[in-house]
Image (cartoon, rainbow, N blue to C red):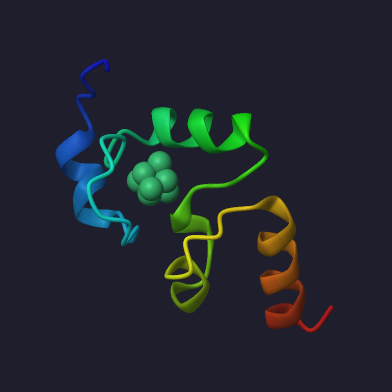
Amino acid sequence: MAECVNKEKNLKNCPCSYPGCEKKGICCECLRYHWKNRELPGCLFPPEAEKTYDRSLEYFIEVWSKKLGK
Ligand code: SF4
């Protein structure tokens, strides 16, 4: 995996609670990996939803629709 000059800075702001992920702090790898499966990175979910580890686009839409009252 390529080194990222922003990794340390990214790690300080990464709310993903999934343990042992090698992509943590390398946001481009994280996004590429999840989007390939039509998922989104954990940081885009509200904290309680992030903890479920369901990163699907469907869950993202469901959670945010409810939260925004749509
Ligand atoms: S969102 Fe997925 S790829 Fe990104 S750091 Fe968390 S577990 Fe790893």
